[in-house]
Image (cartoon, rainbow, N blue to C red):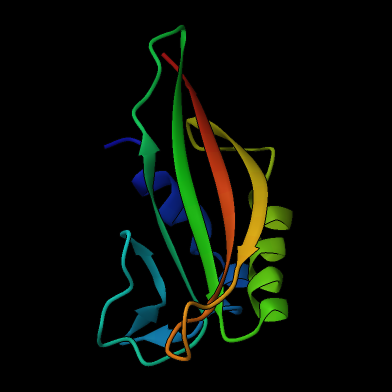
Length: 125
């Protein structure tokens, strides 16, 4: 599906990778609603599609990026790095817009802060 590959590619750059923990031989960045249960780090990013594309002369894809960390400042730092790196930039065959949302506090002592970003990918048909 268009979008997931593009988001994964634009998140996997040195500036963003430096903000998250390692996961095996890769970085803690996943295209999934859930974080893998065997992940033992505290800083990670997961993203997923929120809505299917609209049918106009430009396909518009809606995604959510979740920047997770043990403290609110760390979660916001990850989100700000993503915004500064990819917001309002043309990447391969799409244009990326990001909108920060409120930081979601942990539900319990096993959870992390989540600085969520609303993502819109626009692709000319």
